[in-house]
Length: 323
View 1 (tube, helix red, strand yellow):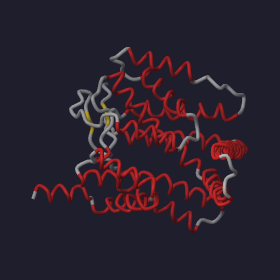
View 2 (view 1 turned 60 degrees about the horizontal axis):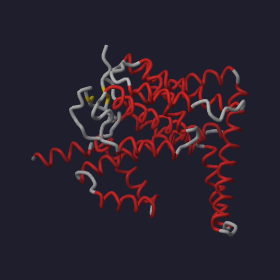
View 3 (view 1 turned 90 degrees about the vertical axis):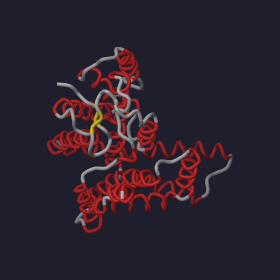
View 4 (view 1 turned 30 degrees about the vertical axis):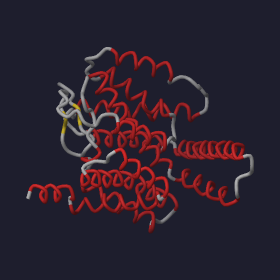
């Protein structure tokens, strides 16, 4: 059985021969940024464990990848702590990596996104079964994660105040407090997004350094997934707004955040496809827009991404161009 390079889109597959040399470094850098942005767990753990698993259990053509895996293996035990989160961090990543490798061996021609999402669902199922058997474990993890987020933000705000050489304004403190509480409630979705992004980085590293593929991941402009996923967004929104009980509401908002993030990327893909890609100047303008008016950019790309579910905008553009 050979393992081929699945594209990041919902469809096509790029073979190991790397027929498309595009994709370059932009996609893994974007994914790495997503890992850091949703950093519930250490990024080297989220990326290193899957990469080691891929090198050990998937075909290996370039021995240099073993050296990179060895570096990750040396880094992972650093910062050892007997706290539960240290173990949970590694247990979650090991289970997700195991699912991803198993799905890759079983479905070698499947797109990366399908295998990545399958790994997240599989890992969530394993931990969900464990939490159902011992309900107190989930409460303990939830509390520890909340403490980690609050401590990290408190340290960041202290450092920022010291840098400015004056206390932070009350409005800033209030905004940070609301942001902390949102992160506490939404950490499962952020962890899932971070894990999916980390699997993407690890797969790109494996494809480039262990197999020599030109483009292990597809281009953002072709990013898509099953149109049926829109019901996860709609169902999550219904739970968030009308769910009976805090647990159902929290599950709804986590579903909304996870799917909204995927649809934002899909919307960005449509924009890139329609524009033929961004030049350096265009990319700079887009980055400034994200920094200056992030709600507007996120809302716009989200609407485009969701609309693509029903309108298939890229197919319409292809037909218009060819016609």
